Image 1 (tube, rainbow, N blue to C red):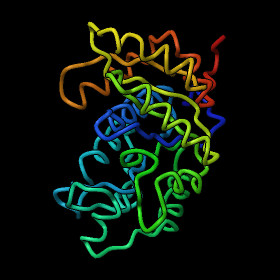
Image 2: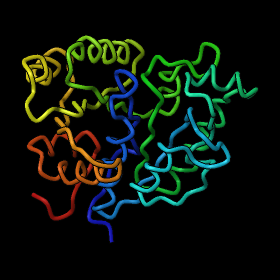
Image 3: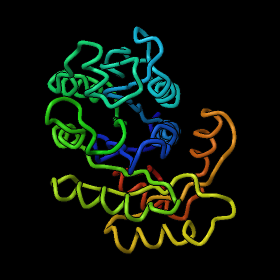
Length: 248
């Protein structure tokens, strides 16, 4: 039985750079939402650096496990490439052209099978998919709001503001920001980052997520637990359009 409802059809998870923890945060969010009985669909439109391209890559597998989603692998991850480079280059090396119409059709099917769809991009919103078609263009065509994942380290204010500014310049909705992997003992720059980004970025900080040691699965499960305890939890629920039945 579902104990929650969502007014939105999903979100698109992007990052300020590679290696900021988009997949872990997306998996944690998927796991968190399943706790309310929601059917969570997940999608990694393009994954590069996949060892065996006839199977899901590591990111898509993690998302699928976290969401308890056993959909068609070609829906979850339509394009999988061996070389760990940008999607357009990886596709070119594989002799494949990424078709954005296929991505939109796959996403629509996933939405029909789920209550909420989480799409995780590759890198940031300005990453090229093919020709002049960027990840930002896919976000626009999917008509999903952005959740931005950033690190707290030095330089993150610039990277995060550039991301939110570019998104809004392209008429993309930014529904919030996660600061991921905050050290237990942050330095001055790390300690200041959430406040500076919140005051300058014109977007809600949905959560400041702690550094957690362990396997990827351990980390996303513990982050899902952390979501339930956050002071910013109401902002997270509002950003997701999440209404919990019986909650005040």
